[in-house]
Image 1 (tube, helix red, strand yellow):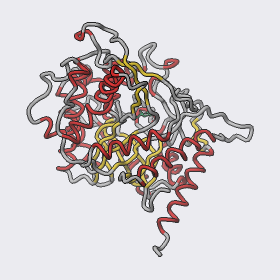
Image 2: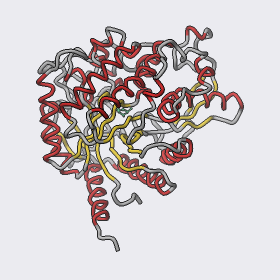
Image 3: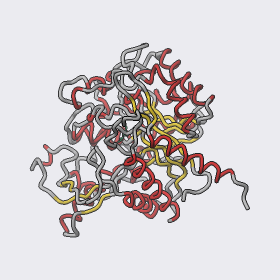
Image 4: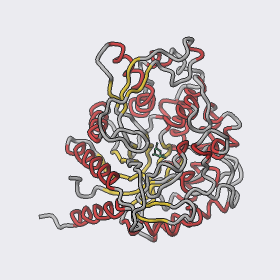
Amino acid sequence: MLPAGFRFGAATAAYQIEGAHDQDGRGPSIWDTFSHTPGRTLGGATGDTACDHYHRYREDVELLRQLGVDSYRFSFSWSRLLPEGTGPVNAKGVDFYDRLLDELLAAGIRPAVTLYHWDLPQALEDRGGWRVRETAEAFAGYTALAAERFGDRVERWITLNEPHCSAFVGYAEGRHAPGAQEGRGALAAAHHLLVGHGLAVRELRAAGAQEVGITLNLDRIHTASDRPEDLAALRRAEVLHNEVWTQPLFSGRYPADEAETWAGQADGPWRRPGDLELIGAPLDFLGINFYRPITVAAAPHRAEDPEQRSAVDIGVTELDPYGTRHTTMGWPVVPAAFTELLTGLHGRYPELPPIWITENGCADPDTVGPDGQVHDTGRIDYLADHLAAVADAIAAGVDVRGYFLWSLLDNFEWARGYDQRFGLVRVDYDTKTRTPKDSYHWYRGLITAQRARTEEPAR
Ligand code: FCB
């Protein structure tokens, strides 16, 4: 059982729900460019209109209010506030987030804002994107603006969402914007994302921000066997997925064996004296996104010459030995791995700040029944089992304070387009009609029961 005082929220991200991609002065981001490039997203899906949240935010805040969550995690679109990434401020963009924040507060919901959920202004990508340090500096400027304009109303700031995906899925695998497949470029991007985080933390502190943290998608990684080559593959995967972030953030150093993973390429001239101090500044919380575990085994590199390798070409292949249910994303459902991830982190990094689960949820094959409702029992089972896994971690001593469910609404699932539905609320993409699913009513019941327990006088 989750402890009294444990908090519940729901999460979204700007490009996945807002739409209005070219309205009221918003500038393009790398996701506009990417999704408009043929072959990049399923069926050519884009976020041009998405859930039309930009125009329907009042209805969405009302859905949150009725759900009973006490916090809502959403992201600012950088290029809606600063169309060029730096320079002139878009007053209509500021107005939009002003109205959204005010609406949330009036509904009794505390805002948790992600500053960067993957949608880099295209103007900055054109000047090198995260490969160059100027982007980290631009991020600091944008953060200062956001803190100054909105800091009075934001309870929780998340600098970056899943920098692993920004750096390695975006600049090495190429499955996400900007769609690059690089070695050094991706490793420089990883470092500049961390520098951007550090600079943003400094701006937020200077502005007197309430709670400051970062969201990582750390992986619980299993190994296919305990053969030495598979154990070595596991180490390389740990560095790529987890330690490239956790070591600089929480241990003040780069992973000692990173050269095994990247043949010396990670340690490039983009690393400057003083960076680790900046990156390792204390945080108020760590956000964790968890969906599924992975299993790795040793495999040949795709490119023999280390100079030709992308940063994800680390001699590792992913297997799926999980004989469990899989979600429509193809992800195995293994709640115990969530507990393992949390307890493992706790054991490894004693100085870790309190943890917030900033995303967890399930893409289910939802159908609308003859009664017009969505009976998404698969999603409810997933959520109940993963919340129980969080409770187990807390019982084992891990300090987890709250849980943001991904997602409030069905939305644009990046390269997977609109086929993957993660919402508690169904969105009909033709009419933009919202229909709360059974999981919405289930989550509301859980929150109500939790609140009653919390408010019970102590005996
Ligand atoms: C995470 C992303 C989020 C959403 C979920 C399913 O990696 O942060 O935007 O797409 O996956």
